[in-house]
Length: 511
Image 1 (tube, rainbow, N blue to C red):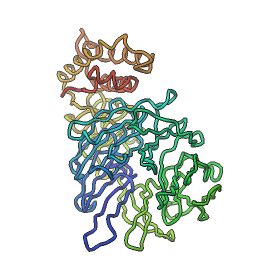
Image 2 (cartoon, one colour; image 1 turned 90 degrees about the vertical axis):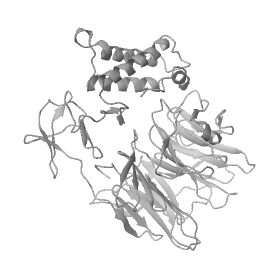
Image 3 (cartoon, one colour; image 1 turned 60 degrees about the horizontal axis):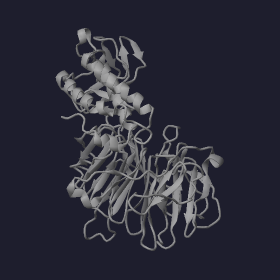
Image 4 (cartoon, rainbow, N blue to C red; image 1 turned 120 degrees about the vertical axis):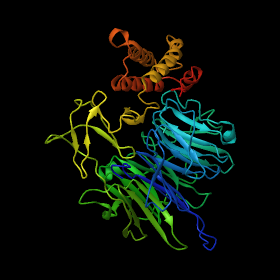
């Protein structure tokens, strides 16, 4: 949903049929929505939104720092999990979401999986974290597993491998191969399986026979496969060679074929040979009806759904609409969302090319670059709205709102409003926590020397805000706050979780 809710990328919902229906639960996942009965929850750029009337109206139920990009309905524990760029939420009823702790310093969470005991795992830019479900009632938090390899911390797709002997394996893809753990991340072993030098972003077993698995995974340009007792993945298709494509998004197995979404459309295998060993297969473009006004309509979500005893459909999530394809690839529109354009701005009669963020839920607008104070800017849409930059050039229709800033290109809310006394108090507390860290950072507890350099910058930012003004007065404004938050967040990403916890850097602000 452009404008108010960002782009619709993922839909996930669960329909529980009545007792008269013998087909059992139907699970639908089409990027960024989760449904139980008639209740929908959506992860958008404006937070989590809830609908009780099948999506006719929406109410905001929780703000999140970054949009939820994946929902996961657990099999071995009673929770639904929501994954954002740097946070994981859990819920039992979709309305009351609780943020889990232990992921301080993580910049991006990529995937989520669970083991046979219901323990959860997430892959991040700082390795794999695991959540012991047995401690859920004792303030459990994510714990960083042991480093996977000395040459990488970035982790991508996760896969729960059900071993015949009953051994529980969690696989994770990295830039240097696939590793596995049999002990909740205490140790990692190289599987010696190759993904052609690129990390795999998604894994799935498309076989209905648990004794003869057919594991498919994708990189940005490959579709890879591991059949039965094979010891390694082989290339099923190289999309760069076949179609000059290097941006595979997601795949789904539907009606005996593999559907692969890319930046150039959706492709499927031309011949039914996915279970034939020792071959490569040709993929051809299908579902041209997904295109919009002559341009490629990217499919952000692909999910096979059993509608009845003998009916299957492929649900396709696109920007602003949900499409459905049958087994003959006949397309129809399931739901169309109205397109709400983000406004352009005019200063007098001149249209401006300036970066901005407009938040529909609280009617706040903030320019990425401060504009001249008290200059009138008009939004180029109906009804027209007028914005007058205040607070040193940042345009906000409600000056009491929290300050909206960017951290590493991602939107982030400050946890406090522009109350100078409160900010200074928080900064002085943080200053006291940082002082003992100076001179203690090394190659074992941080990415030094970058961490030490960034620590010096954070301390300088705090000092500047406390006494950098005229006659050593405080200097608290949007510019100094934004610089401090950017440097502080970057510093946390350069040190280990142990340093963060030992110095209580995970508790900020205090209120």
